[in-house]
Image (cartoon, rainbow, N blue to C red; front, side):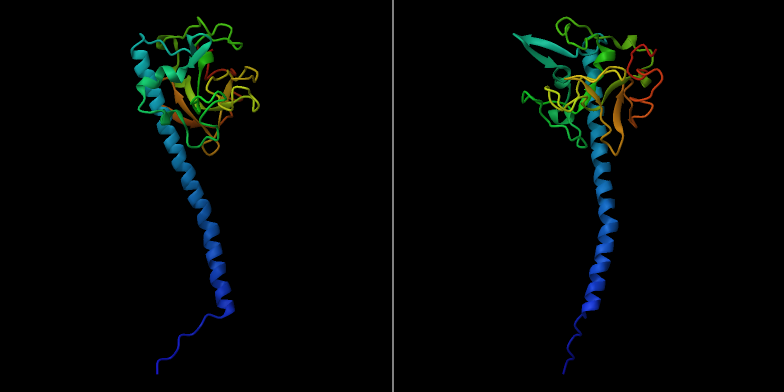
Length: 225
């Protein structure tokens, strides 16, 4: 007669469960880290495509960057990402998978998880008083393109901003927090993803970049002073 298979004892079963628990504790953080790394890579790809759209835009405007916003009739405004949108494949590249910012603003319109350096690349005022009639700089006016922010992952400078939680209009680091203005968001494993004016992309921690730089606005001011 065939001998019956031996059943697991309770102790053996507990040992197996303990081994599985240990393996899970080791592997789950690895999987989570890999997922975050993949999201950061996708985000970097998207912001790079946005940077290319700026280059295509300036190619049609004699090198002049997009405005922060422009009037569309009545009291309506479109924003910079609407200006460069014809040069991107789809609006998915407006977004960053790492971001917790909503994909739409308070008005329900599609928004971007990237902030445009409008304080350095246009003369828009903090109170938006010159929203109609403000001007943008040209590529030739930037003294150090490799050290001048074009776009960066961003979020609202004020959590309770009535414009929503996005930060698509970037403040200078020396500017005070305000409604409808943004700050760099270090959402890619503790670092912000930056698209520089010379079109290279990098990940930067806040320290020495958007906080603690000397001068404070070094990486945002187009004149580099």
